[in-house]
Image (cartoon, rainbow, N blue to C red; front, side):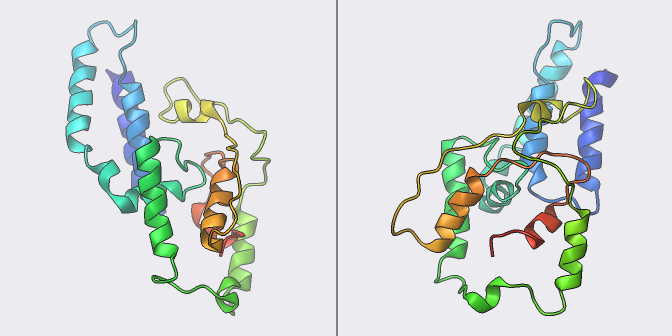
Length: 201
């Protein structure tokens, strides 16, 4: 029972951090569901796991229907569309593109650079980022009972992207972002620093 409930404890800690992002929610739920799959050595825990799965399905059924949660997950370089099906990926992309469209926000050369006085803060964010090669590195799970071992074992993925002529710059930038390798999830990964130092305005 302790082995079954430990991932819930880990998930509670992850979501209760001061700097926790809403983008972690879909990933945490997916990890918990993976931990609750029936195994050959359950020995009397089948009913407990089944009831936990049913309870999670009831409580979190609407999570992937929230455009903001979908968009935030897609914009988290640790996850992107890893836990989405095609419809969810399209919904998240549509939400982001709608927000970036000229009728919603105007981007120009003056808004791309850092705000005056923020240079030192951005440099500090860069110093806080982990120094690693995201293209070839695969993080090994910390332990067999870790909440995130399934996610970490997948590693990073690179998706092919065919550039289309005539698409807006913001849409091309989103495609470029999605085609990049995912950032490995690790305790020192600072999602806020990533976007403060990002090449995408």
